[in-house]
Length: 335
Image 1 (cartoon, helix red, strand yellow):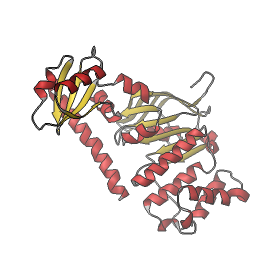
Image 2 (cartoon, one colour; image 1 turned 30 degrees about the vertical axis):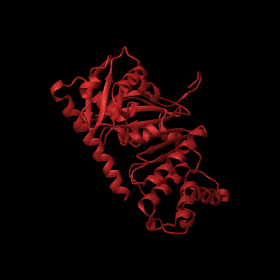
Image 3 (cartoon, rainbow, N blue to C red; image 1 turned 60 degrees about the vertical axis):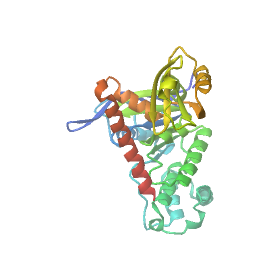
Image 4 (cartoon, one colour; image 1 turned 90 degrees about the vertical axis):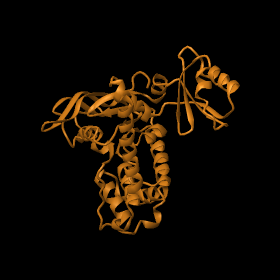
């Protein structure tokens, strides 16, 4: 962001405990207006607690916090759109009536509210259920209705806590497009997720939280550069093991085979494109590509950094299993 752009959110040394449990420990944040930030980390990392403090639902035990230049989100409530982790609609109200009610609560004029509601229902492909009771909708449909309620009043700051939870892939894509539209319109967007691929597909800046602590705060591009594994993935034509042949190539520092794919570590002093040409000249290859670090890879590397080498691989496998279990839970919830 350029000079003179003020922060939508500022946190300085924020700490929150629940009895003996430290939920958030000394978090510092500066989120510029107009940015799109992802809060990522496994379930229970402290993401929702952080968001609830931003929203003044919870209050820090210590530290400073400002939202849109005010000490409390309550002072700017009509400029904020919030989709909480706990979903909830007025079950007996009809969909359009519910959204009109939510719009009026945010100070919108009743006169032009119905066309605005119907326009949004069209955008999320729910125009045909406008007269149905909310309780008649599927979980995914209810979630889209709640998303409309969070942005209907055209807020400057949009905060979405696990917005993709319970959505099928088609509606995930629809919601991603809507979030990108809000960002393109100059809104500040913050969302939390434990499914890191979602953040990769949307965000230009990542806040990674683990066990209540901020462990990473950087742009997606800089994260990929910083954690570049300097590795190549190779799939060979032959069924014969090629580990020794690849390892013998100048500039290759390590070779690991997993599920038929060779992960080839390239020495830092060697250009990866040069290494790829050497591999192609040495063995029959069906596909070859430079490995790009995923946010999951980065998270696991950060969390397991400094662990005993003997337990390093085991710790990484356990973390991957934990993240995968969370992702599968999402799939089951949406089915």
